[in-house]
Amino acid sequence: MHITTLFIWFILYSVLGWIYETIYCSVKELAWNNRGMLNGPYCPIYGVGAVLDVLICSHLPGPGAVFLTCVFGSALLEYTTSYVTEKLFHAVWWDYSDMPLNINGRICVPGSLTFGVAGLLVLYVLQPCMALITNSIPLYGQEFLAMMFVAFFSADCVLTADSLIALNTKLDAAMKALDAQIAEKYSAFIENTKQNLCEGLNSLKEKISFEEFLEKRTDEELNHTLSTMNWKQMRLLRSSVSFRKVRYSDFGNKMRHMLSFGRKNKEDTEWKQE
Image (cartoon, one colour):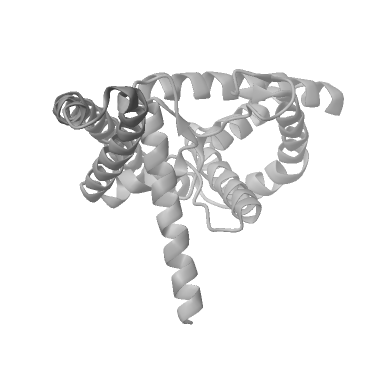
């Protein structure tokens, strides 16, 4: 089996995975949801899983063995991918925390069982079609096609990684700026307030004022940071599920919700105008 054929299968299965994810999430949310962390229409984890399914499970004795192998193999692949991407980019693209029998929100039993069924579908239904497609293309044609796929895919990975690093840098800088503004300006604000309040009302007034002040400054910093982002960074912000285990987790999640809410309001306004 030639490496170029395997790579073509990887790309085609990644595209099919993106189609499935996008349709499923768009229907679930009743709004267009362009899935995947990359800019192109593909989800590489599906491509990797499908190719491994073909390479490993083709030699197994029957559907039962294929199913179990895909269940445990998909769990390992999902957990590893989720862990690595979170460590590198501090963001997660799926979260099973609300699903039963999940492990750290990265994998869950229902999801792994679903991928077990998907493994059977790939091996016994989709792969014969994939083999027919690639077998109909001469080897030199496959090599040319694979080279184009490699070029586009590699460029997409580099641009996406660069955008993710820039996005995390912006969020971290915004959080530091917000902390500095609150520490500096609120101290002066409190001192001024204390001079004009009765002693008995100080504690209540300071709490209310702090909450209002923090909300106002956070909204201002969110809007400022969003105004400095390009479309790649905004798309990555929308496509992620959340930011976890970093100091700007809440800030990043609020910005993601603000961006999604703003897009929904824009779509509703356009629909009403029509």
